[in-house]
Length: 239
Image 1: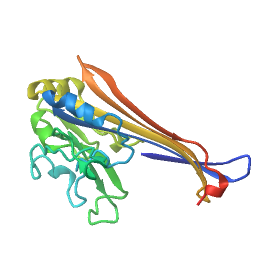
Image 2 (image 1 turned 45 degrees about the horizontal axis):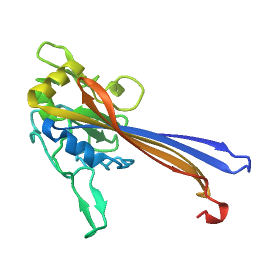
Image 3 (image 1 turned 90 degrees about the vertical axis):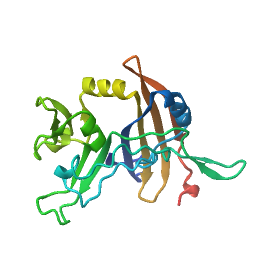
C-alpha cells in the first residue's frame, strides 16, 4: 500500500514524500526451508511482483465462486524471487525449491460488469487449497469472513467492514495445525520504503528495506535484512 504527503524544503521547492510497505506470506516444504531462505538472502523485494507468485484473481471472477468453481489445487512453482546473474552467462535464475501462496488478491472495479459494486474492490482471499484443507467456507458476502464447520472464524479480511488496507488474517492455531500436518514451512517477506522527490523530479533520497521471517519452534524469527539508502542528488544531476 502507498501513502503520499506533500511539504516544502528550505529552498521553497515543492517536496513529495512517499512511503509504502507490503507483506507477503508463502510456504515451502519443511525440508526446503534452508534452501529457500538462502535464495532470499541479500535480495531486495521492493515491488508487488518481485516474489513472482501469480496470486491475483481475474476481475471476471465472483467472490462466492472460489473454493467450489475454481480449484486448481496447490500451484507449486519455482518461478519466485528470480535472481539475475551475469556469469558465466547472463540469465534469470529461478528458485531452487518450489513454493506456493496461501492467499491471493481479488480486484474488481465498479465500472466493470459487476453492477453490485458501488466502489472499487481490493481484498485478500484464501486460495482454494487453503479453504479445502482448513475446511472453511464463506460465511456471507458482507464482511468477508470464512468459518469452519463449527462456525468458528478461520480467515477474514477486516478491510471489508472497517477502514484500512487489505490484509488476509488466518486463525493461528488452525494454520499451525495445517503446517504440521502437511509438513510445510511459512516464510514472510516484509518490504517497505520512503522516498523524497520534487515536482521537477529532483531526487532527495530514498531508503528501501526487505526483511525475511520464518518460524522457529512456533516463534517468528528474522532471517535476513537488506537495506538500500541513497543521499540527495545534486541539482545539476536532476532530470
